[in-house]
Image (cartoon, rainbow, N blue to C red; front, side):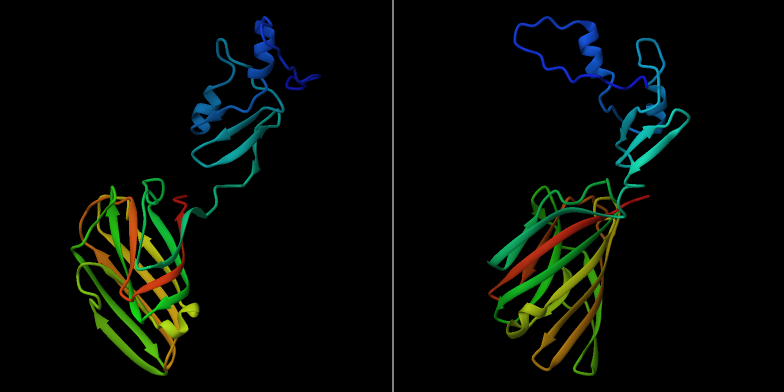
Length: 246
């Protein structure tokens, strides 16, 4: 087949490289294209390699590797970019504020965030703020919290005021059971940001479950987040994921 090699050359200092030497490497590497349109235009033109069976390519818009069968392109894997893509995490210890910068971008419209705690000192509330270029946004938040504790229901409007969003309470004696998941809609787009949050923990009076809806009405594209704890300190891990747009 046209792409087959019989050797993988290794060059030494001062050796003269011929066009044939360079083409052996250039013609059999894995080119990277922005999308299928630029891929199709990249072969067969003047000075370009003729598309042939065995050719590989990488498509950056969908994060997939493909090969040419001699008749058409097929995907090696993954079949498409992952639906939920890990971005970053922060492991924190004995602090009451954790900031993650540059975790949001226009690559994804929506994000998924988790928080797990392993310790806390003094009971307190977990809250969040969007941030841009290292600075928190501290106004124009609103929300509603509903939940249940030991068989009793409760509901609160703007439970932590309008300077942040609320993620529920941690009781220090049961901090190792606190877990949070939240979907953040459009934080890196110049529009309002909405949050849908579910938290669960063991409380002093029994299991506590809380559902929170929050909004940040400022139409700004943010690139980071800050998580605050109103108690003395807490310890745990925050992970951030992006939802694939397609």
